[in-house]
Amino acid sequence: MNKCSKILRKVIANRKVEMKKILLVFILCYICLNLSFSQEIGLTIYNQNLGLVKDKRTIKINKGIQKVEFIDVAAKIDPTSVHFKSLTDPEKCSVLEQNFEYDLISRDKLLQKYIGKEIEIERRIGKDGEKKEIIKGTLLSTAGGLTIKSDDKILVNPSGEVALSKIPEGLILKPTLSWLLQSEISGENKIEVDYLTEGINWNADYVVVSDNDDKNIDLNGWVTIDNKSGATYKDAKLKLIAGDIHRSAPEMLSEADGMYETKAMRSVAVPQFKEKSFFEYHMYTLQRKSTVKNNETKQIEFASAASVPVKKLYIYDGSVQKFYGYQPWSRTDKNYGIQSNKKVYVMLDFKNSKENNLGIPLPKGKIRVYKEDTDKSLEFIGEDSIEHTAKDENIRIYLGDAFDIIGERVQTVFKCGDKWCDETFKITLRNHKEENIEVTVVEKLYRWSNWKISQKSQDYAKKDSRTIEYKLKVPKNSENIITYVVHYWWD
Image (cartoon, rainbow, N blue to C red; front, side, top):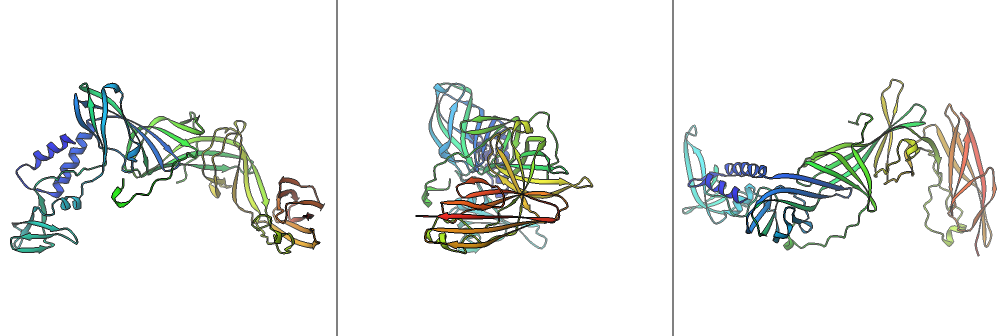
């Protein structure tokens, strides 16, 4: 920025310069100065609105104490996370002070710096504006427009172009990191600056296409990067961290503390990202450099698998009762747990395994499912979200509710004694489809912790301490019924 200041002073020396010209010169100066640095950018993005920037540059350092500045840094940087080091000779170059400057130049900031000082207003007068009039005066205020004292008059919102005599001290074009360095040697020095910034995030998006029989799917995974950090990372070495890292809660600051189309399905011969375990998380490293622009949403494919075996599931979870814990009133309340719905869920279930052409840790994200119609066009059939899924774990996608399958759940008998209760349910599944189906019926036994199924129309599987499941086959255009009696007891 010292070079920039010298250039600016030379440009505006001995004459008045309009504010728009000042801003233009400032921008051009910034560009020239920025190009003088060689850069190597590393960017690690966490899926928690956080990024780690590793910025390597070659700069000229003189022997002694001097100020060094990085202009092109993220606007949402955490200044307390900055780490500066010399890669050329760390023992002979030390940091005395570190600052983050964010008083950015603007029309309002320029004018604020000139309150109480003389400015000029240039305006055209005459019938065709052939003459120019210059009004000199002291700027009194910028609130609601300009107020100027010119001689013995007060001018409110005078028309014309504002001309300033020089650039005020302290204004910068972009957020700037600066260091006061002490060096024992002179010459070119390669340095690295690491810092954390908010405003940059990534998530996974998945596109799935199911075959005609819903027995196999093709899956493509896309990394979606959203950069609103206030900086562009050109030709960055890109890494993504999947996992939930812990961050301490920020302290509250007082005002005086300051503010610091659906992608086409395709196969990839060589994966773009290389995955590996990193601490208790998973890291995905892009095998090429990529530019991540400010205010840009970028998508990069990271996974592709064809012909993944999948199961289509119909699940009837008829009870809509919430579990409030075992309560004395719930034991004998006849109406507890009898509210029900008729919806049958449709799900796709597959295993994230190498045998199924997958077998890599899949980051959490949204998964959209399409199915090919008879005319070969893709139609959207539902979407869901998945959590971080390790290899060899199952993924279940909820797509919606079946149109042609209806469930009905009815309490038919309820009897209670002093220390027991018997409850009978009848569950009916009606299949209006032109094919035989199997429905998984989920029953939740929320009335009390001690229970047993005393009578049943067919076998069940106990899933946990208060859940059982039935597998019910329902012929096409027909219905099937489950009945069971549950006996509860308590001391």
